[in-house]
Amino acid sequence: MEPENLFYSVDEFGLDVKWLIDPQHLLVGPKIGEGAHAKVYEGKYKNQNVAIKIVHRGDTQEEIAKREARFEREVAMLSRVQHKNLAKYIGACKEPVMVIVTELLLGGTLRKYLLNLRPRCLDTHVAVGFALDIARAMECLHSHGIIHRDLKPENLILTADQKTVKLVDFGLAREESLTEMMTAETGTYRWMAPELYSTVTLRRGEKQHYNNKVDAYSFAIVLWELLHNKLPFEGMSNLQAAYAAAFKNVRPGLEKLPEDLATILSSCWNEDPNARPNFSQIVQMLLHYLSAILPPEPMIPSRVFASENAVFPPESPGTRSLMAVREDMGETPRSQMETKPTSFFFCFNQCY
Image (cartoon, rainbow, N blue to C red; front, side, top):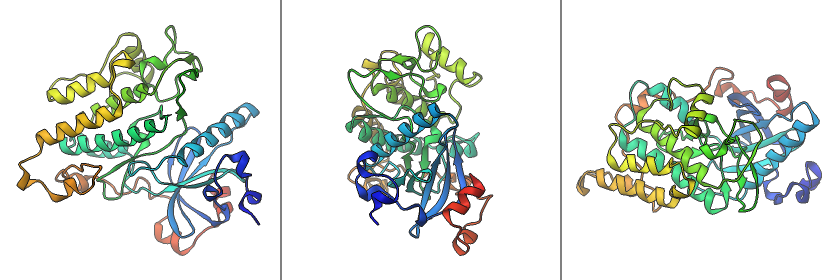
């Protein structure tokens, strides 16, 4: 039987047949993450360890239509872009449930990484190196005309060795159009750019003109968090933080930061979106900062320049020992999962 007859027509799905997966080959293991519209599980696809995102369809016809449209948009975008700092896309299916399969990243979210490290801060080399990973992922997305719109530590995952950050979750990503009116208030308030809000109230669903510079603002908030290991706008609720940023031009403090880093932050979260740098410029600014603070050449570890498109920061002493390799091992031990696999449908009925 042809794959399109198994699940979903290629024309309707808008995908090349190579991206359609057979759910009968999926084995679902322990849950490793959960959001408002989806749950993520560790699992296997044809003996490959993967992350399996199962999307809720919703309860009403309106919800179902919106979530199916978001799912199809996310899959279409994932299939178009490949980069070492984006989670590798493996495939998707829409029936019997909406599923997106990507590579399995075992280092946990950046949010949990930072929480486990507190009250300590990341070594500056490591913080800027992670920021460089994020900026390069965003540079790739923007080069394909994609705005992420939900850049935050929960959507940034570390590799198992905790040396590289990869961007995940394209559920809110959109293709950029100069004429399109896009829905505002799509991301998480604390990290959202001010232009995503209404000029009067924070009314959900209001249409606003904006461009990919909304991601530059979110990047600045994430970078500030990497450097300070504190919650941005600490002491405020998410809505209070959004209101302060949008209507009072409040930003996290820049005290005690090196001038170059303060300049990067202030330019990226500039109130005027057009004054913010693009991610190609941000990458260059971060590289310039790293080159200025690196020790003399004989002392530079060879791995710093191991890739033609990356600068990996020296590992912070003791950082790795502070971090749990897994976010959640409480539901099903890996050994049990490998020796006693459960069928996709059985596991779905039991844990979803």
